[in-house]
Length: 315
Image (cartoon, rainbow, N blue to C red; front, side):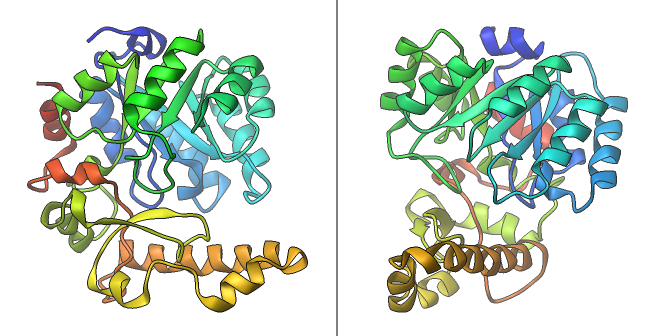
């Protein structure tokens, strides 16, 4: 399983443990590195810059050969912490940064000056060509089987299209729950995969036992798209609570979203309410279960240590 990604990050297997809001933590990434893959954490999982700095130092202290670690940055204006988070990452150092939801230009420039590689989330060829032109080290092809905010194209269509058109490596994100899935993505032209949902049901994940067990009890057919979290379509487990509140925006939200002056504020309020609901559901026992996941939980049969999940993905 040696690919351009294993060479880029000096890892044993071409797998990135995807950054997941609220779920990812240093314990997961340390075990990922021990298992010979790369681990990534959203910088927004840390409330303060000091917390982020402490996490980087912990990961550097526990880094092992064959493993790698990085952080995910939201690089648009909605993340007011972005520039300071980027500064800390460049000061402390990490192996790679994954950018999402905005132009990665500034991140690529500063990260490369600090010797950090940059991979960029893309959902189509247009943006993939843009990030390649800006100097990205790889494109992460977010397909329509990804968990959370996903793309529109199938894994085969998106990965094949990008791998043929780009000179930088393509990493497929979405639809991977077992080794057979990884082999399939590599056959489409991917140089590696980004895997998130299977790691939610890990012993090390920083969420409730109920959330983890839901990833065991539910499957691919139980994943639905909702507009009720961030205003942007997002995949969640179709729990009774999700069925009760519905997955479409309300009539009032629809009307307000069409008002040019109010649209921005409505989206910000909806995002804040949705993120708060997601945080509570992930970290506390509650009947308001809004659990983000992707269809690859189909392969999740029990709650396991990260090392065993990696073994299942690679053997």
